[in-house]
Length: 226
Image 1: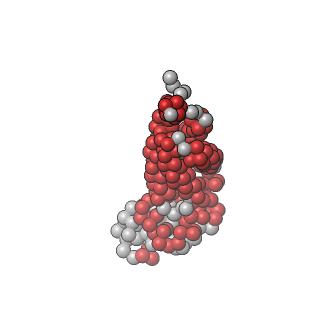
Image 2: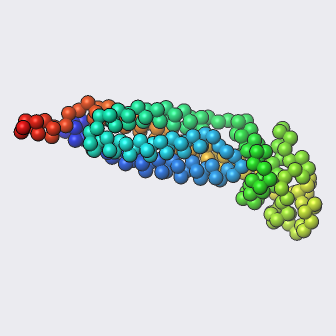
Image 3: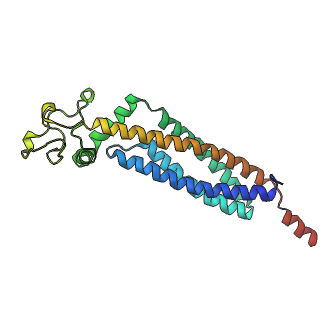
C-alpha cells in the first residue's frame, strides 16, 4: 500500500535521484546563460547555480538518509531542502520579474566593468560595435575597442581610424541590442526552470517528514524474533 514505509522510502530515493539530474540541468542552463551574456556578471543566475550545487549536495544526503532511515540525516535534509526551496523560489521569481530598465542597467554596468578585453570579446561574439547607450554616456566617439576586424561592421576598411569612430561610420548594430536579447532569454529560461523545480522540493520535504516518523517493519520483526 502506497504511503507505507517501503513506498515512502522508494519515493524519497527516486525524488533525490531526480534532484541530482535537475541540479546538473540547472547548473548547465545557468552557466550557459551566464557565459552567453559575456559582459554581464549576472548575480541572479549565479544564485541559481549556487542553489543547484547545494541541491546536488543535499540530494546525496537524502539518498543516504533514506536508504538507512537515518533520523539525523533526514532531519538535516528536511531543513536544508526547505531553505533551498525558499532561496530558489525567490531567485527564480526575481529572474522572471526583471523589467526592461533593470535589464538595461545590468547590461550597461557589465559593459563598463568588463573593460576593453571583455568588450572586444562581446563585439566579436555578437558582431556588433560599441554599446551606444546615450542615457549612460557610453560609446562616445571611439571609447570602445576597434571593430575593423569585424567584416559586418567595417567592410573593405583597413584603417582603424576609419571604422566605427562615429555612428555614421558603422555598418552594424550597437552591442546593447543583442546583449539585452540574450540576457532576457537567459533570465526567462533560468527563472522558469528554477521556479518549476522549486515546487518539487516541497514534495521532497513532505515525503521526508512522513518517512522520518514511520517505523521500519523489518525492525519490528527482528525485535520479535529476539
